[in-house]
Amino acid sequence: MQESDFQFGKKVFFLNPPGVLSDVAATLSAHEFEVYLVYNHKNLARFLKQEPNSIVFVNIDEGRTESEWEAWIRGLKADPDTASVGIGVVTLVGDPELSRKYLMDVGVACGFVTLKIGASKTADILLKTLEANEARGRRKYVRAACPAGTAEFSVPFRDSVLRGTIQNLSTAGLAAWFEPPEELAVGTRLKDLQLTLRGARILLNGIVLGKRSAAEGPAVQVVMFEPGSLTEEKRDKIRTYIRRILQDEVDKRLETA
Image (cartoon, rainbow, N blue to C red; front, top):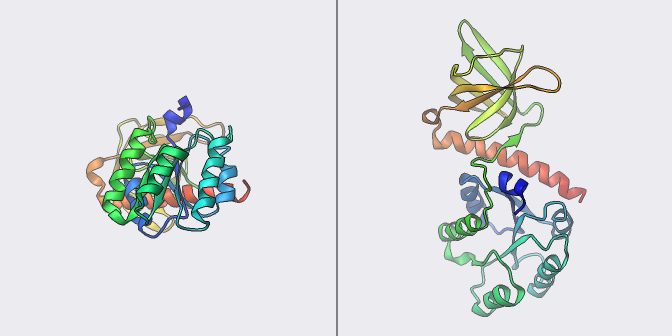
């Protein structure tokens, strides 16, 4: 793994995922893996040339014949630009011979997963596979840059209400601009900090960690969320927003790949 990939982690793609993988993808996201659902194998093959350290799980039951999927996978492995892509197979067919072929002959490094074992066991297998492939990298949390107009915050402070725009976000904290500019001291507690993420409102507490200078405009304030103020429901809302932002970004890149 290249240093940049180890630092920021790998993108994990499910190609033509069946319905059961929607729940599995949410579980993987809850473990802070960067997960995407994609449906165009041609665009994905071109996209992977730009992201050669990604991981792809191919559903060989949908979209093409099994032999065509085998040829597609072999093509990725044979192309120097995509040879480093980690490939796994998912299927509803529990066929030992098919499993042996992909694992031994084709040489998929990320497993042959039979989905009929159920969502929970499937998630366990995929979690172990992603951990073994260091898919999370050095980072602990998936972070998304927030498009304009999609993420704001407000917080009561002293005798007023501070407002601003969130620049980037994870389930651990955020970086934001205050509007008008406001520089708060490190350690300042922000009680009842309300995030508004595409209309979804989340109330929690935060601590100012510091600031980062911006090339233009006011400094960016960095805020860490107080873990005790984050319920699992609130984390899920943040993750849902992050996944949607990242998925939209990848979808746009796939369209032009």
